[in-house]
Image 1 (tube, rainbow, N blue to C red):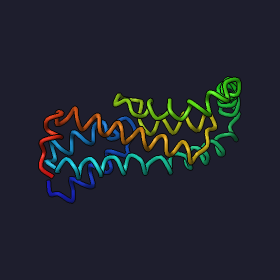
Image 2 (cartoon, rainbow, N blue to C red):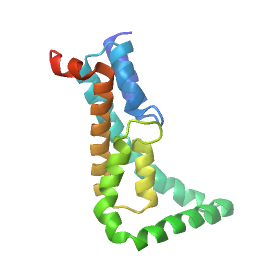
Image 3 (cartoon, rainbow, N blue to C red):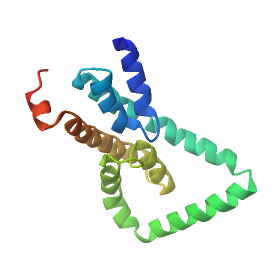
Image 4 (tube, rainbow, N blue to C red):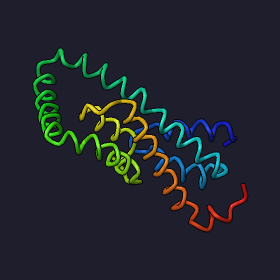
Length: 161
């Protein structure tokens, strides 16, 4: 596989739910043989960029699905429960919610990435710009963790730039 194809595949994989950078970064380094710095920046940037369309898509999808009675009843029930509980701890949510969101996204486990973080921020009605920054920082931390797990600590420290 040529370098351009490897870069495109890496970028696309890092934008997919479940895969995100957790799979794309090791794959780019070990299978596609991209330099770790290039692979790191591609996966982190594209994993962060996917948050914007997710926020927009969730609003659009939610708005159009509300026309269906079954969706309207079920989603409003769930969202009202989530949002009512979040109002009870509104101060804690504003203070610690973004930190918690960052740490959640930073965990390099399946189901804890930018996609799920965006869904949580949307469901809790967190401010978009702050949520975006929290998710972006979480993705950056996750990228560093995955990079260290892929190369090992000595591989990152001793690597030639």
